[in-house]
Length: 512
Image 1 (cartoon, rainbow, N blue to C red):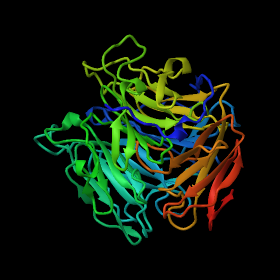
Image 2 (cartoon, rainbow, N blue to C red):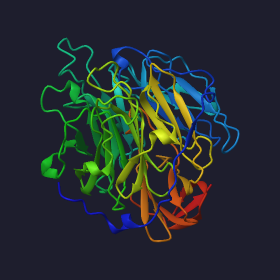
Image 3 (tube, helix red, strand yellow):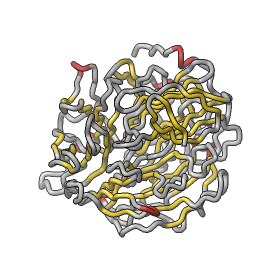
Image 4 (cartoon, helix red, strand yellow):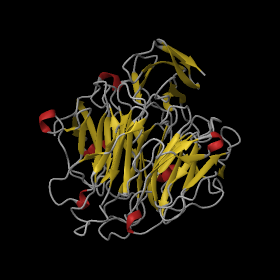
């Protein structure tokens, strides 16, 4: 493989020499929460993070499988205080594999699209974190599939988002499970309601989907990560180009690969404006470096991101990766990579003692394992997860849903973390949370970083929260928002430590 040339911006100094530290919070939840069930819940176990009551603290919705799903309301007393959650009011929902937060009807309150084995649900957010099912009112066909993936985007001129639904094995196929992957579905709006679902065929048992403007052409395309365990022939990762729903291939620059795809993480690590992609799998985890629109090359082994075997637990068999997320956990200015790990159930060829990974980006595109020293090396069968600032102190905390073991939460107590900005782009009208926008940050040395606002990716769950930037020792940074319609705001200078909503006002940004 040829050496990858790195943009000059990536060479800029950003890092601190910090060691990440997390402290488990066993008393954070009012009672243990466990994702459980048989074959249909080997996968899933997603976690959704959102502020459902507008108090500025991030709440949690956790899938339960055969157990009821749970809503946990954040009651943490102050930044840096021990994490504390109370149980929220929620109808008893079983069969839940995951959920994603988004404001479907643009009323300013976040809703939840709930993935299930059986009919899916759209839970409309109301006052005080109370939710009601609104799928029928919006004309959404809930289906009766085994849903394991989801993503959403706003297409130009639409009042409602376009929804992509990823389905796993067709439980009604007598020839299954192998070769019996159900079709994925695209649901587009017609005015104020939804039209009939459009099959995305062939489907290869999707476990993660992500609408992203990865080509930076002003329109999001749909990437799907598929589980080759159920392929018979011809299966691969997929990109459906919008709006015409054309599968991309080598003629477009995209080289499909076939893996046991579980999760997708996306972030621009090189500063060229194009996102790198992390794909979780059984065996190697794959980091793909963007080399052009729709073009990625697998990063070499020396990058340190394969995370192919356990680093502790005395088990040398290959790992199984699930949720993945890029995030700057020590605020040194470089995105790190978290991967949730765990055997599907009792697969003998794969590691049974498989700790979660915390891959710290110690130098440009060089990752080093820090899970054990950071204190997050759980040996439970982890599934969904989230890095998010749960206590409001500017450091990203960690929550992980486990299969047949209690959910775990850790508070980030890294002592020498750098400065940060925590910014949420907002706009009036439709798409209130600016899904599809890019938040760009310019540091005093001229280095530019970006965050794309998306709904999807990970494994069965996602975050509707601020775009978090680590600044290292920088005392300030300039930022702008490139809105979903392509318009760019003016640059705005903010001091380190700013936590704010960035409201669109003409070409300017209003802080609230």
